[in-house]
Amino acid sequence: MMQPRLVIKPSSTTTRLLLTATEDLLRATLPPPRHPHAAHTLLAGLSLWMGQPLSVVLCAGEMASSSALNLYDDFGFGAATAHYQVEVVEPGRRRRGLGSFRELRQLDLRGAR
Image (cartoon, rainbow, N blue to C red; front, side):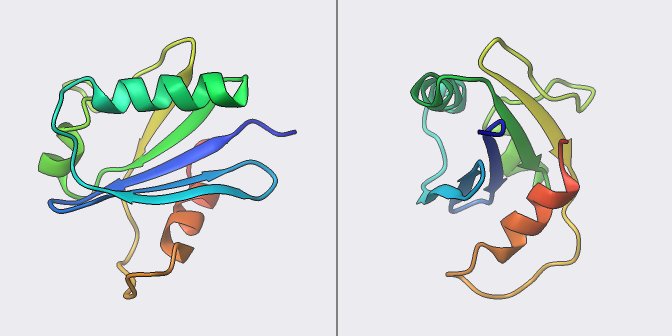
């Protein structure tokens, strides 16, 4: 099984997640986090669930929304722990559609390798 990859796209109203390995494993839309350690806890939990570290791609289009996740430092470098490594990417052009995760899959292809 290849290393699990999680693409995260936060906005002011939602945080979208797409977890893939050889196929889609998890697709979720969550409200913005209400605790500063929520994203770290979620990523560590998913890593433990999968039994291996995650490669995380953070789509940092809206800096205010992205910074609420506390997954990168003041210089824009992604967080790295034993459970996950975050790469911060700028989104490409925006696509429409609320139900499609195609945009996150495209970020996954351009993100951490």
